[in-house]
Length: 104
Image 1 (cartoon, rainbow, N blue to C red):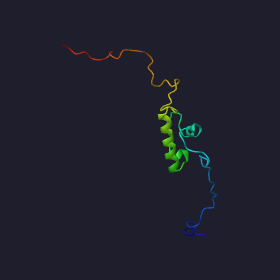
Image 2: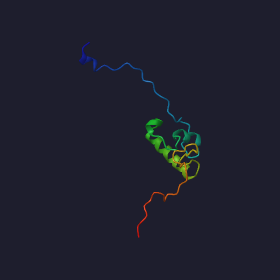
Image 3: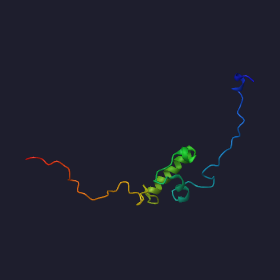
Image 4: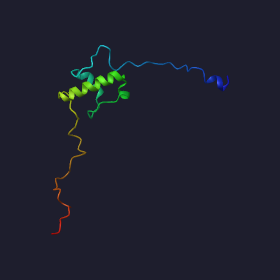
């Protein structure tokens, strides 16, 4: 078989369809914390649609539900762990050290 005919043949790979991440019986609601928590990162950010494998309509509903849960204090806006000491200062020093003084 020559090269020009091979381009039009379909590939014989089997296509395996994945199960949807949200079952058809689950209702997307701000009170359904077990469902909402699957679509939030460890930092508290909403995961993208590509990562979640959601449809556009489902992603919009999840985003609205997460924002409503945050406003009602069911979810935190940020997840700050006390173990993460990246932004803490090691010593308490006054901020005026090293600043120039004006000559009068």
